[in-house]
Image 1 (cartoon, rainbow, N blue to C red):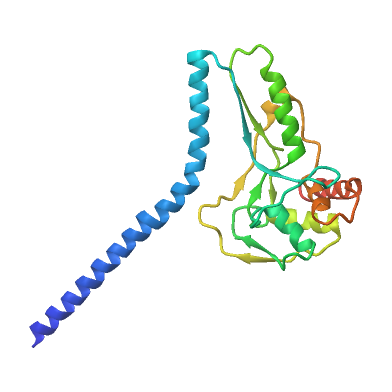
Image 2 (tube, rainbow, N blue to C red; image 1 turned 90 degrees about the vertical axis):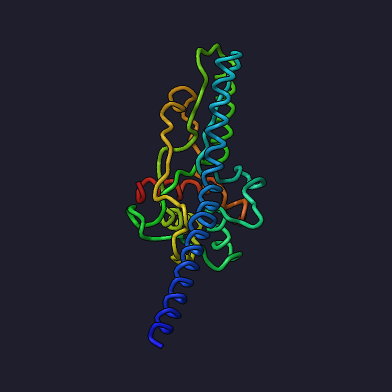
Length: 239
């Protein structure tokens, strides 16, 4: 009887162990692999394309400019053109939706990163400044070049999620409700550009605060007033 009980227990234990092992394999090599592969695939495409352009230049003398984006946001000054995604996933439009009573709150993914307030830090550049960077890069490309042109188009300054929330509250006079939730798998703590090469060779095109986006969403303030308030808020409180 004892041997039969032990044998049954061993069979059950072995079955559970095998099932657990295959569940682990499924999670490790299917769920995680697919997620991180999807995350990395976009970055690898960009690197691969830059390499391809490099070799086309070496082989055929085809000059090119590679412009590396960071977090692009904002709207043109009169508010007629700006960000609008459906569904909306970008931080600044979501903040503005909350400020404009179109959304209850924003979700802040993690407050335990090694940053000053625990939230993720990113480099936000206004879309008009990005457009100026493109124009300047094309003009530079039309000049005789010994080598290819590769530039980071960003501000070189990192702002946290809560920096952005506080800045928009100051700029719009609206309360921006938020809730801290779990981190998103694959997110990193800090990511911002080193734009020094672009500044030296293309000129300093960073002149607009990204928060011009407010008129595109609400239209109840003048661009000059809100931009001035917000830029002053960031410069004095969040550097």
